[in-house]
Image (tube, rainbow over all chains, first blue to last red; front, side, top):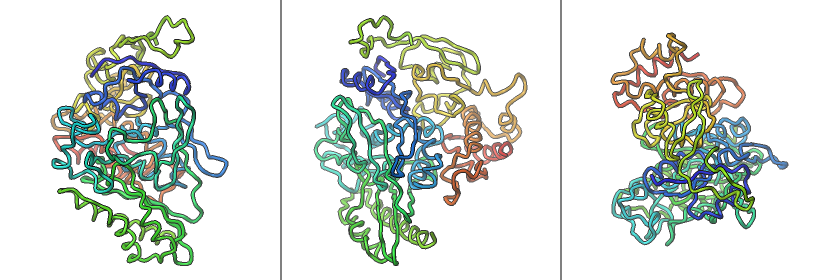
Length: 331
Length: 190
């Protein structure tokens, strides 16, 4: 690991100022991904700006019934929060489906959104990787890519975003608040992560020096039910091969509100807008769900060894929608 | 923090000195320990290499195996991923700090009685993790194995074998002593 200076600012503005003044710096939250990447030599910051003790650990209801989540709220506290469990269960379920008890106790909300891909080539500095060193190449395309992207990938990068939490946030229409040298702005979670295109070194739209200060959930829609389902190689403590977060409400036997997002399939949480458009107003039958999900996944371009993910995602989504329909009918 | 002394100009208040070490205090098993460490030092290395506490083990050193699990301010964490400087003033409990004198912690006794280990390398992490896990369950924290119909505020999560396995999944045992580890924890769980 490269030596680094360490700073623990007392305020957000002090942190942002320090970040802006030091291009080689990184904000430190829980460090569960950043410290690991520093050990691997993937990250080599000259300065760590520790933001984990900033006063950003609150969770409060907004005036309209939403929820404001501070960036340093730990994943375990967010998952266990009574408001989250009772009103946004898909978020609690997504968090609990990720990592381990130890890691969830340490990892922060902001850090979870900024965690890097677990693509083996990205994490191995002896290998080329366009995300790590732009222009160096992507061995994953022809190499080990069973766990990697089937949607939205590019010639330059087939990495997936590893977050479970972000998939639920995408389906829940959450927003991210960013404090930067040029002020404060709010970005939809669905717009926060980007597709790799020809610059996969940029995971998100965050600008240099910007700090995530909070995530805001809009109010839960009346009568809607939600869930998160995840498929992985072992029963616990593994990244998603495919996952789905879904929110559904039913009116007069037809889909009213629908929101669907996939995880494990792309460089960002994949909001299934094509399926949603087909489903709004459709009958709540397995056939209708299958047609909509198939239309969404028609855009998939699997690599040599990961075609199974498309079928896995299809089954997860249809199963989730069927389950939500049953539950919506009984609420 | 002794890392950035001598800042005199408000203009420079956010510019750290390019120092790569700091002096700070950790409270380890109830004892105040002041250390001057390279910022790269993890809590695990601080414990093992600087404080002579070799109970917490270095397995993968990447947060994947759980052998380094300790309690930080009462909550379990992978000490290999925690930078010591960032834990300034934290209260850290290692496996060495669980017993009261000669009286072993109930989980330590249960691991012995159930013979819940073979080589023993993962055991300190398993035990510290189990201590933290039981506290989380008592505080009503749900897990992936908790029925989705369970709402918040219903009190402590009941701990059957499935719950224990899920909540302990961050601790690997290469000897495969899992069945007895679960038995030992079940003995202590309420």
